Amino acid sequence: MLAVATKKCVFWPSKKSIVSTLPQSFKQHYPNCRVIIDCTEIKTEQPPHVDQRAFMYSHYKSAFTCKFLVGIAPCGMIIFVSKAYGGRASDSFITNDSGLLNLLEPGDQVMADKGFPGIKTSVNEKNSILVMPIYA
Image (cartoon, rainbow, N blue to C red):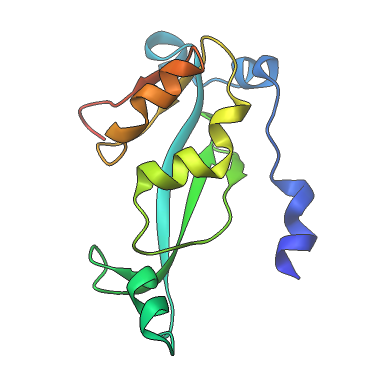
C-alpha cells in the first residue's frame, strides 16, 4: 500500500528541471549530471526454500536481503526506485534490468560509485556518460 500511496512522489523530472535545480558544485564539475545512482539492501527473514535462499543471500551484508536501485537528482530528490531484487543480484545487473537507462537522454551524465563498472557500455549506448568520482 505504501508503494501505491507514494507512486506519484517518485517521478523522472525533465532535463530542464534538473538543470534549473543543479547545486553550484555540480554546475562547475558535472553540469550534465542527470542522476546519481546506488543500490541499497534491506534485510529480510530467511526464505523457506533453498533456491530462494540462494537468490536472496547477500555476501556483502552476510544476510538475506532485498535490493533496490535508487536514483537521486543532484538537488537531492529521489527520482527513481527499482522493483526489488534478491540480494545476490549485482548492482550492474539491477541497473541494466531496471529500466532506468531507458530514461536517459543523449549527453546525460550518470554518477555512480565503484560498484557499477558493468554499466559503462550500456550507458554509452544511450549516448550518455558514466561518471565515477574517485571519492565515491
